Length: 317
Image (cartoon, rainbow, N blue to C red; front, side, top):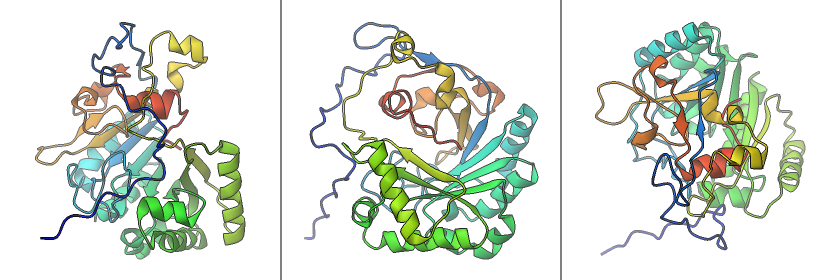
């Protein structure tokens, strides 16, 4: 009887990191030490994310949303469903619409949703691996190229070996080919990368700069560099006092300016969640309308600390 292959360890997991303390992130209002947990209020809805579904053509070693060719925990958002939120966002003065997944182009309505967002005057950001799902829509995408649309391509590292250790054998040349197709066809292109544990931001940016120079890529959208995001590693809880200690403002956090629309499998209609990183946790579900999703968000999840507060990262453009 055949056995399933062992999971491939992610190169972004730090083997020396302490495991997450199970006593943390249990009470939405109080930390494990009994301190008042920090919260973030929505300052203004600058970016509305539409999650097109969790299906992906890849099964990466580490994916915060667990996307894969088999995970349909979030089902495809339809054009009609998306347009309801696009209209509400337009009325609220939202600047940007982001599309994420899964791989957004697994969803057959993805090009039409992008076109609908552009037609309403939004800036549009699409997160894609630029592989086969995207390439099947070349004819539909070409007319959409312009300064309002940014295609952000995921290259998990500036080296092929690390990228393929995370995303699978053969993914590096396909991603680069898709990236070059976008650049050659007039798209505003950005790259999303990650730092390895122990790799400095200076070294990581230098590595990507060398790669872009070798490949002849001049990316108008630039490079967005994310922290390693080891979901197994311990991380401090964020208290109200942390804003002063870290010299940070809660207004700078992602959930102060963005929300995401998701449609869980079996749901009659989509709903709004606080964060692109937390589509499954019910404590971050905020209702079915954007107007009803304006409440404060308690930072009661490790991602709040490792990605936003301490990692200094944001998914938005």
